[in-house]
Image (tube, rainbow, N blue to C red):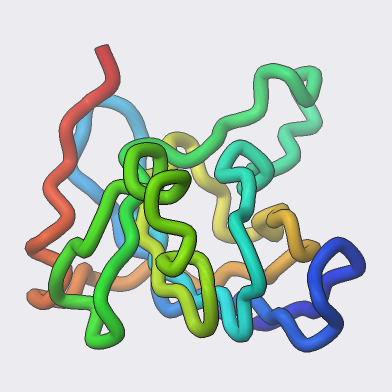
Length: 137
């Protein structure tokens, strides 16, 4: 469930912690992951999933992505806002959670660090109450 990267330092790994269905008008999951031994920022739009029925410009990307604390029970910053202002959030072991529409757990998640297999979806743990879903406009 982890992969190494050709675009990152050789020991950077992506580890999926969990995939959890979200109640929403369209199919949506909450994805939680670690980026282990991260050396710098990652482009969140590079977290995607290939869809053989459409061009890559129409593939889904993360929605409402957040940095979490090490325990995964508190948001410590929004990736789009604090990621650029506070580069230390991108160093070391980085825990991130985001919502992803139309996720297919049978296909891998593409990341800036390579493809990562997804686990079966499971019930959202209570500690992730900190991640409230708000649909896109």
